[in-house]
Amino acid sequence: MPTCKLTLSTVQKAKCPPGKTQEFYRDTQLTGFVLVVTAGGKRRFAYQYRPPEGGSHRQIPIGNYPPLHLEEARLIAIGLAHKVLQGTDPQEEKAAKKREAEARQVARANLVFERQWPAYLNYLSKTHPNGPRSEPYVANVRSFGERYLLPHFNGTRLDEINRELVRELLDNVDEEKVSVPKNLFVCLRSFLNWAEAEGIIDRNPISKMRGPAGVEARERALKDNEIQAFWAATETLSKPQQACCRMLLLTGGRLSTISEEFLWDRLDRENAQAIIPRKKTKNKKLSFAIYLSRQSIEILDEIAGGSIWPSSGPVFTNDGFKPLNGFSKLKKKLDAAFITPIEPWRLHDLRRTFATNAQQCGIPIHITERCLNHLSGTFSGIVSNYQVFEYEPERRVAYQAVADRIYSLVEKQP
Image (tube, rainbow, N blue to C red):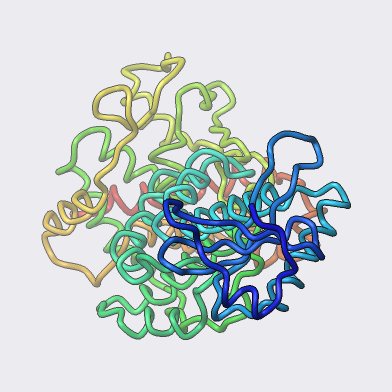
């Protein structure tokens, strides 16, 4: 290996001897700085050193001449020499940077929407801090993802999502239901809130974005003649379906609560109550008691086959193992059973119908709200944190009064 002072003239005149593939010219001014000349006449600079921990010599490429100038290469070699003197292995440092770059590339690839969406669904159904979300809720979120979010954001990293992309998504929603854009926006915002909380992105880009306008609050409640028609229509359903629908009207409970959370081990016939655990309630504040009227107990006795109720399993079930489902088809079956069609209605309207009947029975509004387990209205704000009195006697009267009124209407129907 020739040793010489590397100058511009030396670099330009250096050659590779015949019979060799390359020749190294070692600089006399800077130890480790070398010029490598190939048999084809190509020239490149490099830096050779022995690792701080010992071992064989290593070589770090600096660059080709030209375009890299001799003095630029020398400055780079000086920097590498300082690192070696400080105990740093430049080759290992370079390898570490490469590994970091590859890890960043993998991380960036993992940031794409379609890779994070399944983790969010798993979070909702299994690891949510307030308990797993209900199956219908998760199914609704999954549907939004499959129908709208995944097609629109496929291949898009979460840190690339911005308001413009979201507006484009919402503008392209071709849906008759005006509630879809609003609910879709809420779904996406919740997903990005989760991503921010998990440290996947630094911030949710739409946390303060104004979403689409929602639909006006429904005021639909079944009138007396419609209650009679509804009750008659339930005669066309199976016994479990019939009992579930009538219990919705008699208790004012949410569909998911009555259909999924009414389990025999949560019902107490002696004390005439059904206890819904805190994590299974919508507001997640306190466990909630639904007090059973005489008529509700009669319905449950019929389902149980007597006054001794089962000790486990769902109350409203077709197979004894899974709660009822398929309420969209059930609703269509009810509508078809009306002798005279009524104004458009939903099963959730039965909850509002319960509240309306409670008012007609003279039940105070705050008692009605407690029967519905509402923490808005009378019990909103700070009151919801401090007012935890259950009003059990008053609520028992309310449930019974509504049931009595419903049955008085049913008995009067032609």
